[in-house]
Length: 247
Image (tube, rainbow, N blue to C red; front, side, top):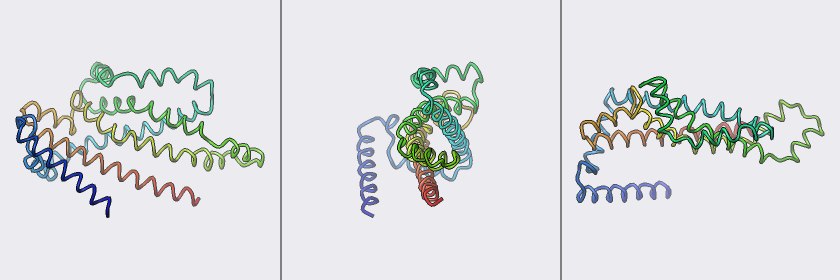
């Protein structure tokens, strides 16, 4: 209850600061909170905006699933093999260093405007984080526990399930915690520049008609969806972790 009260106090302070700024800065740049929140309320019952939100959400979801699947597989390979680590770490670091705008250029050349671009850009932008986090998790495994399993000839299936994957759960949670917010940001930017539909396209449309309140209201909508998604995923992870411990 105390945490909720503090969160509400923080939101109220933020809204007050926002209102004060809107009094002194041109409203084309900083619209009033009342105008922006009013538009947000309209968006939440507007079928077109809800469809745009759904378009963005499925791109975020698919990109995150691909990042987790391939990131865990590659991370396991690199974490378990020094040879693979030395061979592929430079490639992973190179991909991590490539700016989003370069991927955008490549995507526009390859596919033009559409749904493929945002998913691909989000995937390649977040994959290095998933791979390197998984490698860190593998390298932090308790070597004594692995040796004990080897001595007692524990089947590899159980070793993989309870030791490897069980120890990686906190790192999987960390991957999701770090990437889920970034995924929404990257998808929105990609939609803004190379997307055919979604909230990023709606922000672009608002900019084209110099509707700053519209742009900010769509941004707030995306933020709320991102926070809700993060909370839902964390709740599911806690449930999965508790069931894993009981298995």
